[in-house]
Image (tube, rainbow, N blue to C red; front, side, top):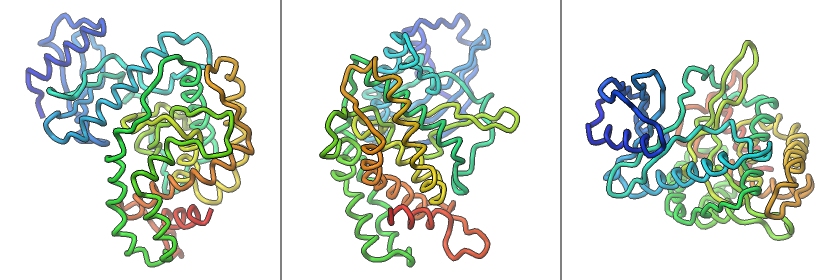
Length: 351
């Protein structure tokens, strides 16, 4: 549970390089709050001698080369974010619902470190996505998607597309053999999922703009907006999005990819179908009000968004397949022969 002195020294060095001084290093307290949470990190809380609190993510450089890639990918994102936030002059670059980044180090020949702000005191009861996110929560998340997409379109600073993640994407194939256990699924549906989960096709889905979408530039996509990568706070009876976490697998590409996850994986089929139109209208309105600051073309319409969405829903099909075949969250409501997530997956494949 204890950090080595070498790791502590590395953390102090990263803090110092970011202009954060710690006068009494011996008085600093480290407490492990998560182990291997998400893809690759041990999570520690750091409390300084003057009661400043940070969260530290540490990646072991000797464990797996793929995990090193994921760590360095997230570091690239947060370094880009730091530059964008330092230049922010308008709502077009309001990214307050992303974690504040204080500094980091690459994971190559030594452990990788990311240092961010601590929001644990504000985290409330997290919404139950198996029941389905409310439309209000979906609207909040879509507004944040529009903000980080707009920030990318307003920025001169580029991010790499994410080509190094193709091999990692092959992990989606691990759930494919378990499809045979889903007796409700037709052979054609299983064939679709196997085809959609092929690494090159998934990468293309994430990064390419479909033909016929002239005037639409690639944008920043989180690519993994499942509930474990979002935290919420509660004030009285109201639940609000607090932050979007874990940017290891971000890519530059499909504008509707993250929206497809929000409404496909996290909402019931009934709510998704009822609220798709207002959600897409909100998204287009949010992008339109920031377009004067865009440095890349982005002529999105509701019609273009709806057309792209039907293609992008293949991604939440794969994500929900994971949840059905690799977790215990597929609970059944009374009187139902199928679990909630199985029903959601079945309806997603239809659409």
